[in-house]
Image (cartoon, rainbow, N blue to C red; front, top):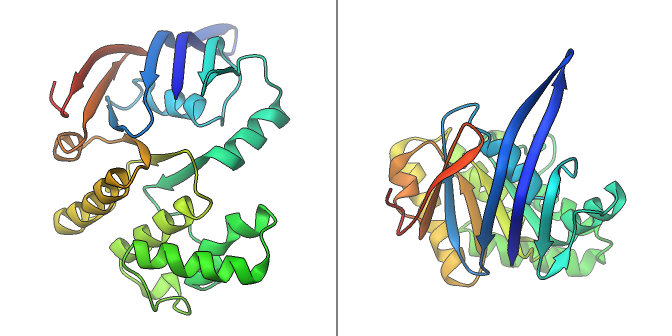
Length: 227
């Protein structure tokens, strides 16, 4: 589904050019649950920004479902992102002043879905993440684990081709982290492709595949979460 060839990324810092990613070659198949691990500053966030169509300023070749993307415009990348990717973040990024139903509905409304269909879809994904009946609740009154479930429901609401989860358990205690991982594994078992950035070896070990980034290079790529 995703194929990167010789991806390089640099940026200017004053008069110096800082090289962040070095000749990244990577393929991710549909249906995989992949962990990307690495120390802070290793380049993993830059890599997922490119994979998730958030950053198109790179050299090299990017193919998505066989289509070459490396010459796409900013507008084309934005359209790709809106249609194909769901994002889950460590700090949830929910709007505290609106209720659960309204938070989950946002990407559907942006996509132009009719309100009656939106309500039905929101109810369905909240049931998927174990929050049926919480539509009128407010995120600020809910636990961290529940807020992450809302975030996941919002991410899957548009039926994206893949999810990018950036440290999704980073703000949660051990028990709640495992509950969220169980939810991700259930979604994956039902066909959702998931690319997860994590510092937690226990989280990475539960993924089918672990990719380790060091100094902007892929230094290991192994199956069943072990390196």
